[in-house]
Image (cartoon, rainbow, N blue to C red; front, top):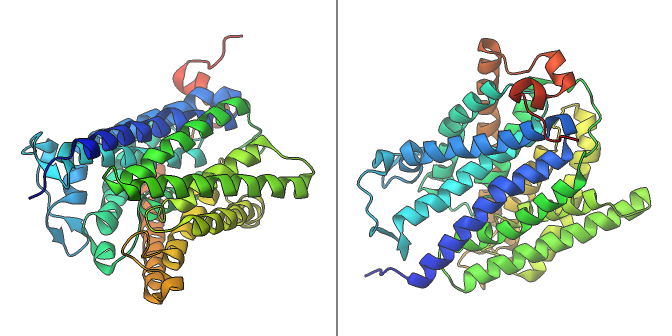
Amino acid sequence: MVMLSAGDTAWILTATILVLLMSIPGVAFFYSGLTKRKNVLNTMFLTFIAFSIASIIWVVYGYPFAFGDVSIGGLIAQPAHFFMSGIGIDDLTGSIPTILFIVFQLTFAGLTAALISGSIVGRMKASAWMLFIVAWVTLVYIPIAHWVWGGGWLMQMGALDFAGGTVVHINSGVTALALALVLGKRKEASLLPHNLGYSVLGAGFLWFGWMGFNGGSALAANGLAASAILVSNVSAATALITWVLIDIIKVGKPTMLGAITGGVAGLVAITPAAGFVDVPAAIVIGFLTTFVSYYAIYYLKSKLGYDDALDVFGVHGLSGVWGAIATGIFASPLINEASGLIFGNPAQLTIQIISVIATMVYAFVISLILAKILDKTIGIRVEEKAEIEGLDANLHAESGYRL
């Protein structure tokens, strides 16, 4: 008989608060510091409103459709417990209260929605953004969460995603790309960070909170949680150092922007693998993901011509792809039950590739359709005058600075 564990409960309560910290102030500060001063409040607003909308959807019908007891064809759960009805404070999921598992997963949904906003800063209507998030959480996030974590077809196949490589990062990354394509390029192509200090603070919140994001995904206060935290930090540190070295080689000096970008890329890449790999694998994952995201930001984006303002696709999308594939290569039976390619199980790599392709195609296509529908109905891009003058003043009648 499974009993409530006070230790596990205390740890997941803490981890939930850590993910909340990275989701709101972390993303808000990280993104807003990278934008123009005239859009700093609007950029923060996109994070706060996306997280809030996802939070309400999750407790009304998101959790029932994602994690219901019965899967309908592996695609979506048979819903129950709308508005959390019928779930008591003493009900358990494993050794923790079910309501705690629900709120922990709520923070993942909110974070994923907030991450998308980095691609559209400075040029999307607030009303269109809010409607898009409602539709996207409903039609994209909830089904993919069920596929991978809620008993859906990818979970049945054996796909590994410890803390959100596919569900969170690939999902948000390809959605960001779809939105950027529908919105088109900014009127002012240059985007120098107006307050890099904000972004450094945000990156610190992200790194700190990510330990709850990955460590909490063990759903217990145990050695697996500790291992996940260890390899997450190792991957982030490796990626940061590697990016700094690339900056020194390419531009002759280390940059703080490069350092925090590398650190975040390393955290993204280790996320799906955190509960499956050891320290040597984490070093390799963090090292190689730097080249993946660096290439995407400085070469692929200009070559393909999409305007992903804050490189959500390059950092979250493609580092998420590498991390999911790397899980199929490096998963160690000494850490968890799963084995990857180098431990004699090439089938796991095949499964990981299928999960990556399925997530990318579904999230991109549905997001593109949603964005085009909104564009044809209410319009998703702000007027040229508002874009040039700034969205803080034009959409919110506020200013981030009174100097």
